[in-house]
Amino acid sequence: MDIRNIAIIAHVDHGKTTLVDQLLKQSGSFRENQQVAERAMDRNDLERERGITILAKCTSVVWKDTRVNIIDTPGHADFGGEVERILNMVDGAIVLVDAAEGALPQTKFVLTKALARGIKPIVVVNKVDRQDARPDEVHTEMFDLFAALGANDEQLDFPMLFASGRQGWADTELDGPKKDLAPLYDLVLSHVPAPNLDKEAPFAMVASILEADNFLGRVLTGRVEQGRARVNMPVKVLRADGSVVETGRLTKLLSFRGLERVPVDEVEAGDIVAVAGLSEATIPETICAPEVTEALPAIPVDPPTLTMT
Ligand code: GDP
Image (tube, rainbow, N blue to C red; front, side, top):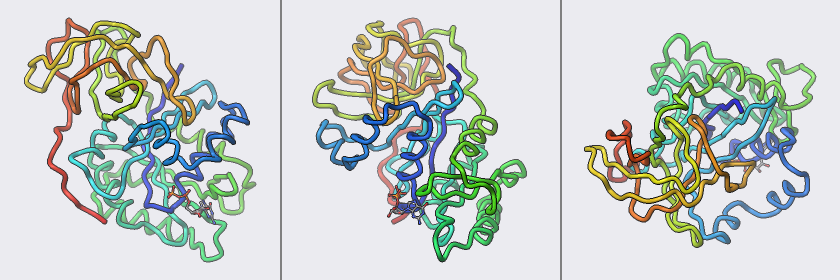
């Protein structure tokens, strides 16, 4: 299956959760009752119930035979390079901005990092149904912001959609048909490059997110950078200097489906996977097939630096 990996960047309350829920619903990649059950419970409760601390949430929707992995970027602060590690797993981003409030610090903070990485974001001017919405002004403000943050010509030429996540539509025109989110899905498929990675090379991924799960123990999430991960395959874990942290087996592979993670037998380069079975591995080490000798390039874990509130 074709894949797109994107980050979603927004200031808190600009409508990220609502939009992603609508994307899930409209993609039809979910049974209706499952969606409702998920939605009925606050996601934080869901995390607590399962004993998982999720720093970055990944949602996966299928649109026109393409799996779109949407990774939430924490906007409040940069915990030791976390934002960069997330941005390293994606090839595109949706910058979601409230049509009344315009860009706020968290948007700017993550957008700066996305632009620096060469990502060409899609801008979504959201909540245009608001009484006090000023969509055209906010569109212009976003252009000015991109320029102020050092966007290159290609990045400045960003595609833009007006949207109401709450009403479940996105459109290039404000007086368009306001039907559904198809224009946003289609834009993601056409504007964001597919990951271009070697599926035949020996398996390797960078551990980019670490969680402690009550049942599975250490769960490490990252994008498969080369080859294929198979359940129960022997692996080793490498530090940046090439030293071996541990050897072991991938006892469980979890792939993202909707808001859920489901066990799978195999994941190939380009897809995002959560793996269990390792006892020492941590961020940002390389988990790889035994024959791999060099760690993949990775963003080091810096001491936490509070950059924005
Ligand atoms: P998040 O913090 O970015 O995940 O934002 P939420 O999706 O939780 O939305 C924050 C608030 O904005 C909630 O009260 C939503 O009901 C409201 N909201 C979300 N999308 C829209 C929209 O398209 N239009 C309007 N008017 N309100 C919205």
